[in-house]
Image (cartoon, rainbow, N blue to C red):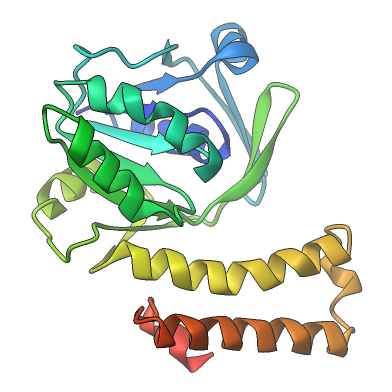
Length: 246
């Protein structure tokens, strides 16, 4: 299948690597210094847990044009950057499916804006890769398990997209987890992640310093529980349900 990865950070780079590995025709969209790095060195990924490095030559573009055609486009970038690319997505008339991947706390606003501005009315989905890491000296340091999760769904409980997703990810190492409403998933994820992020700030990203700090750990747990309670009172569903056991 013909796939565009819109964004060349940690998540976009690993998704490009994995989808290209199983035979898809993958193009990655990058700009500025990152575009030049990929042109010169290729897609260099240090798979940190697996202790190996891969280097792949890939197709690279700088923009999504109105007449560009891909079977699916994954927009993989920080949530603060997404709004700036929505006009390009709405202007495109030949891509039938866009999947926004990341911590999208404004998923409904994104879906509504594309619905109101696009003349082609593409299918919009939201997803989340369970991958971490950083960029360093022209390469990506990717922290991922052998079979990283890929959570995906829309905002209305429809599942008409499953057949194409199965086709895309069938041979990959990703484990697909479908969700009825990805907005519930994102809100739950924020309730868990934000207190943990503050522990990281508190310890200057050395969480071993926090391991014996019961006061800090209990405060984080209390914050997570309170965050989930607030979500339930606001009418959201805790997703995944296993989080309820927390």
